[in-house]
Amino acid sequence: MDDTTAKIIDILKKHMKEPRDDISTETALADLKIESIDLAMIVFELEDTFGIEIPYNANDTEETSAFKSVGSVVEKVKQVIAQSPTAAAKA
Figure 1 (spheres, rainbow, N blue to C red):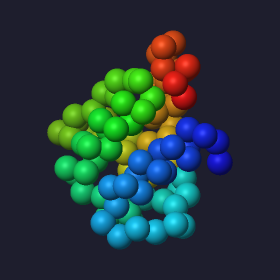
Figure 2 (figure 1 turned 135 degrees about the vertical axis):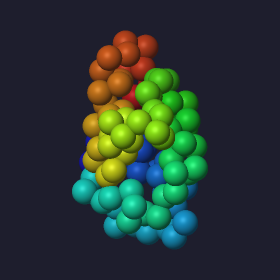
Figure 3 (figure 1 turned 90 degrees about the vertical axis):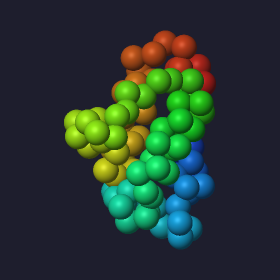
């Protein structure tokens, strides 16, 4: 597991209703019992941690589809980091 993935999993763990340690990139966010309000807080924390801006609108199904599994969150963050030269230094 790379550093970016580990940081994202740590952030997700802080927002889980029932802590667990068996989280992988295949784990669905629904399985972590992360609610939509928590997801908004997670997006803010990801932005702060990685120095990026993640396009996220809870009413946009295309944007929310990037937040279905741990792996999809990791891929979205990595994609945004790759497009942001200042964020690469923080990751």
